[in-house]
Image (cartoon, rainbow, N blue to C red):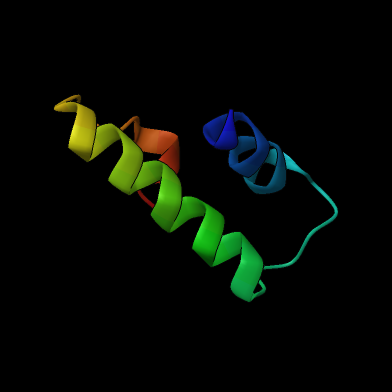
Length: 45
């Protein structure tokens, strides 16, 4: 399941905010919004 993989990227401590980290966050936010659920606070940054 794609959201699980993107969450791994976002939660990894040793990554800096590169383009793929931002893309993972965007995907997760869109995923929650399309499901009609509130986006968890940790994914809003």
